Image 1 (tube, rainbow, N blue to C red):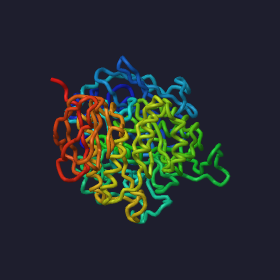
Image 2: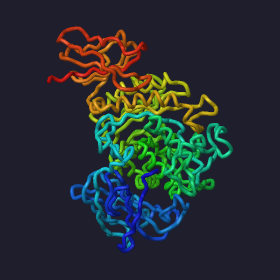
Image 3: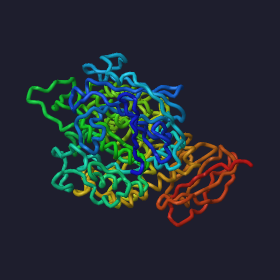
Image 4: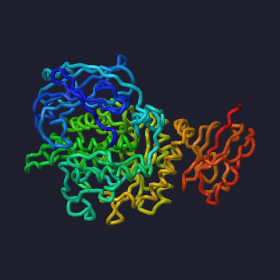
Length: 613
């Protein structure tokens, strides 16, 4: 990672002010737009314990004179735990990403009291002096000309459309990338990470049952990040490779405890209750007693990886839980430990330029009424308007029962689907239903049916079926058919290289400026065409995907005028290839596109009104 944080400590009592810097930062008081400001305070000495995480609450109010935002803070041990593996110290930290240039100010609230961490009462507990009440200023200047990835485009946010949007450039986001391995963070280079005994075979990973991503160590580049004496090259190299292939998203589950992999969790090593000691909950029972003690160094190491993803332009398809552990903390209730988990993840990671609050993979032990409470709570700490939603079962009867009660609700922004068949129809169902209910959802298929190495046709068709329904895109899920290349054992992403190539052609098509800026206006209107699918803003722009390009026509006779025809190759990508201009008369015949540029019959056809001069 060439973007690093430079630190300068100001002599303001016990406050350290650290600015995320670039080559153009003038001093510690000035940052570029889309870089985070990082405030580090010297406060009470603490250790990784329940009391530390439950009984302190650090918040900082940031204001630019027009709006104010409250960002949660967290215990940071010695302030360099990613490298030192420290579990104690006196550093407390807040990270915040401003979205407007100009002068900003901040004011600190630091309180102490029993279980105060998730209290919403401003004056709960007692003030921690001298930090409580501290204030300061900093300046945000325009985006750095050297910015890379999402630092150049701005934070992705939900803005009420079927796509999230970069707040710097205004670009709409369409995605494709790995949907496997689900335990991407089950990596041997992270502190406190081990295999507790997977539910499914993981022999291909070796004796430790963890990812090393050894085939990608050589993809690490000088200047990229590491931690703790050179750890991290495998996972950072894997991300480099994926970005080079055009992948712009990756799926990862933050808790796989008791799940398929059983390698990933944000806490210190979970300890089981003795028999009869565990508390009962309304719906399920937990068997662990230290799920309020967070592993500071591990989380700092995750954060280094997430920052590198921002720099590469890779979206965080982050799942907060897995099916086997969705009710691990407080059953299906929105209890203290669940709120604390959400707050800790918000404090440490939500400042990133791409994040989403996905409650979990197949979270069917949380029923719709309780699920709505969870999402409503997430929205109260969602200061960056990241999309909030959840995944589903591949079974229709389970999917319909959990999604349909949420239609039209303000707190839900996305249906992150698992679908085994009928990709186009099922994606369109939720795109259309959410639009008609008055609250548009972002609708990707994060977990389609398995796509294995060499399944290029399946990958290409899966992407276009989703995209032509107004869906956000797909994750490439490999399932468990190959014993050495499964949803928990992938080590070498190159085995899917031809798959990354074909799905990235789809992403690049929707990044073409004249297409991208029209995305929110496009609605699936397949009735306008024979032998294909059609996205249309009637009278302006029509996008057709067809496997019968030599024998397809488009009925736009209700919108007379002159239209240009352009072709895009879904197999090989490249530029739009110009075809003929056609004139449409009211009540006339459907238009014929002419001969495709090459002999194969599957094409994307762009039909756009020619503006009168």
